[in-house]
Image (tube, rainbow, N blue to C red; front, side, top):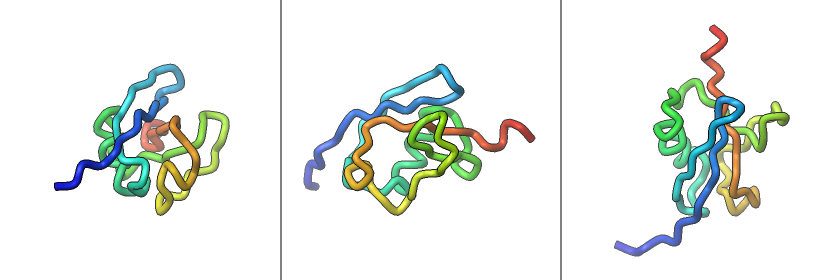
Length: 82
């Protein structure tokens, strides 16, 4: 088992709440989504990862945090309004 360097990522959700996850900066957002969603208690199938709350543009899930240069992101539950 090779120890992977992890980084602290701030996950903002529900406008005002935030949580911290420790994840590999090289893992794709696709791989990180389940971890992020479980921390926020969101369903991964209904969660968008955005750069920030203002940005309605979903992040590219094939990219890693390092690719995107991010250490903070916004998780949005798109199922809530239904």
